[in-house]
Image 1 (cartoon, rainbow, N blue to C red):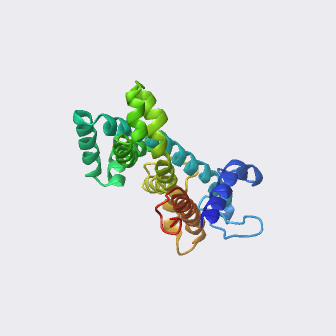
Image 2 (image 1 turned 180 degrees about the horizontal axis):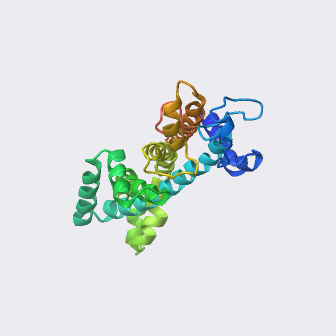
Image 3 (image 1 turned 120 degrees about the horizontal axis):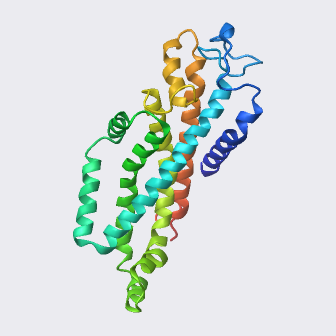
Length: 268
């Protein structure tokens, strides 16, 4: 499954980077006379309600989804690792404050909170990334905090502390490397979640705004033509499902490879 997931992710990256340059159609060009035309040799995925090539729009939408996923995971993991490591290492009042903040955010459904934040800030790609990042750091912080609580009592960490190593050095050189495998797995799985969340927000009209192609927006417009032109929703829906599945396969494979306690990798 790991190889399958890696292959899907790699193909998606290639499609997002070079795909739009290989398709002889602009994702915003319209052929109103051929609107809702089904897949053909000329337009492999057919045309949408405005006569725009769906293949070109799916490939351009892949860029949006991957950009959102990468930025959200990058910001969320960085913020979560920072707050989680500080809370776990120092404990006391700092740990209590960070833990209560995480409890408050976890008390709300993540997508509902993102919808509320984007509704207040205004629909745009930047605000979608900001909202998802401010919500997504909690999972990384909880994960890193647990890893730091365990690692700070290990002998090599206590030895470094006894030798006078500074707190930033202990965290960066001795404690955080023990948490990186778990964070890597969490980040890989988080990519799929971020892509789904962006598609959901765009579906509701709170994400990427037209005419910029987005898989969620394509699904939203296509749902009114599901009976007469099902290809409007089939292809962007398949793109979302396959890419998220690829990241899940990759994350599961990394977890099996990096976690020595996982069944199947445990040594007697």
